[in-house]
Length: 87
Image (tube, rainbow, N blue to C red; front, side, top):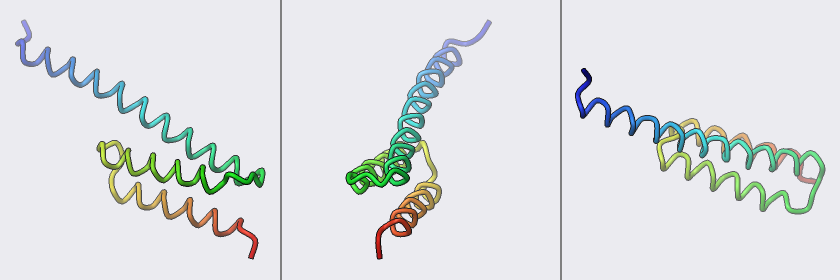
């Protein structure tokens, strides 16, 4: 028979996994919204970029992304924005 502590750990892992999955999905959604706005040339592109960067920072703080991964993604999003801005 399993120990009580191991059962509790399993419950905690399940809860954490669901939360992480939800946050990671929301992160991907905000990034896709920014990329779509950029491709369509919408005027609120910078607002969507700000939301994506904020989501990346939150994911980093909560331990969903490694700090270098978050930095790399932020850098690439900024690069995309600069590339598409009129010179």
